[in-house]
Image (cartoon, rainbow, N blue to C red; front, side, top):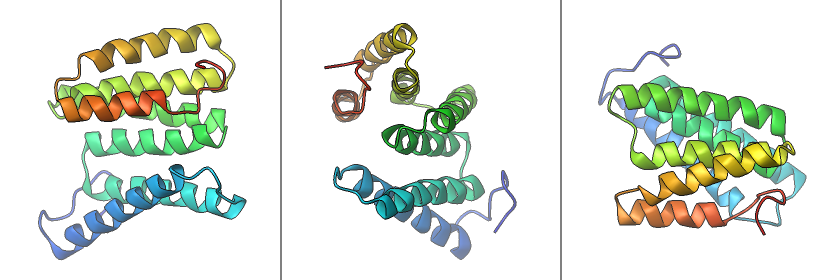
Length: 168
């Protein structure tokens, strides 16, 4: 594997396999997130899969992959009510989204998801007013998502929990 922040040879067998593993870890994380009946062992496996996806994308991806990877880890940690760790990943998600945007890689929904994650982590931490402000920002950014399919996905995610008493 290449050191963090360095891309492998594009199209190489190692890069292709790493992408496949990263996608599998991402998919497995979402399978865990979709369930409400996880055991403690499954929660740990969910965290491991999210971090594995992030680590694999770190080796072959760009700032956009890093942003989305940190968002996924943050989402998992928010679901598990780990506010301090989640907040750090939201910060990194925002940082890499900004960098990806500067490179022309970020899409409109990436910015909406940063605000959504920030709202959730603030709600989890009990900062209701700041959380509401970020939720309104996420909703506004969500209205500007151009692609109807991406907008529908974002809207669905925005309606789902957990919101830690911020939304009904």
